Image 1 (cartoon, rainbow, N blue to C red):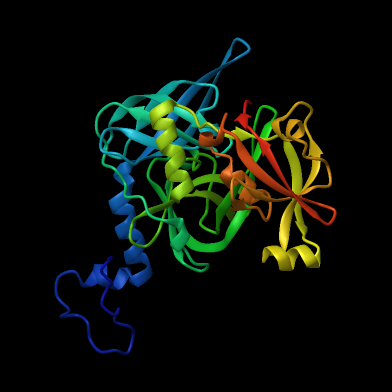
Image 2 (image 1 turned 135 degrees about the vertical axis):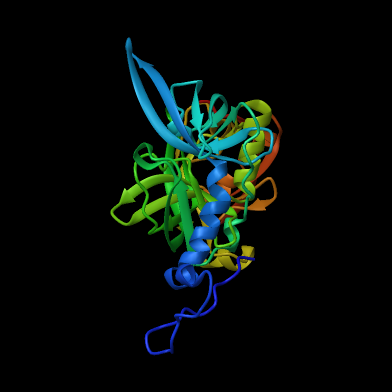
Amino acid sequence: MVALAEPVPMPGDGPTDDAGPGADEIEALDTYSRVVATVAERLSPSVASLRVSRQLGGWSAGGAGSAVAFTPDGFLVTSAHVVAGTDQGEAAFTDGSERPFRVVGRDALSDLAVIRAEGSPPAAPLGDAARLRVGQLVIAIGNPLGFAGTVTAGVVSALGRSLAARDGRSSRLVENVIQTDAALNPGNSGGALADARGRVVGINTAVAGIGLGLAVPVDTATRAILGSLMRDGRVRRAFLGVVGGTRPLPARLARQLGRTRALEVVQLLDGSPAASAGVRPGDLVVELDGSAIEGVADLQRLLVGELVGRAVGVRVARGDRLLELDLSPVELRA
């Protein structure tokens, strides 16, 4: 737990001339700034400034961003768009060291990437964004405009936001994105969003407007993605070929199933697993592989690599009937 400062003497509280050593520092830092300073001091050595170079039609273009060391053997997490179009670069740390890095894997559909730098930069502790609350203090540490180790602070403005991500023809919603008013600038992407205990709870990914920044949450799903990138260099996802949206269930079905929403199939891709299994536009998908489906996020969460090539059951409502269909998801390709 971060230690809190003693109450700061205010005008009229009595003489402070004999307050002793450290009085000036205590007067300059209130509880809020003491917490921010402590977190920054703890995490800044783990945050790198990235410099990358891309070849675009015969021209060389430079780019910059941030990354956070999360293992003691040189693995760092950053935003996929920071290292898009390149396989290597330079990582600069606040101790003045510059280390070459290589891209281990990237996943544009979560805007996360893992790189590995030479040496052993100190690893930042990972927290759990599921524990965040609106109004909670968060601290952003990154490399805006090329200035390493820059710190801004703010609060969690909103939770549960969605961020659209795209990879070629494939698209996906990154769920439970953190919205903060901590100032984010170009170059902050890939940097750390930390709580007051110095735990990384988000990876800064976008500036959505003045006073509005977004961060990919560090949660169970993110940890699984990082593990896949470290192990395989990519993230495998299952594909059904369904385009749809959330729709309320008819009252009778809602009572029967004990829930109020399902995923309406708006469109099916030709030759897709769902189309081959007999799913039709207008069907309401209520279950996949035994798990309830109430909307796009539920379906997306279940389409993991382990389903690829495996026969799974899908339950759909068609008119006043519930139908059980079997299909075999294929791997999603960009």
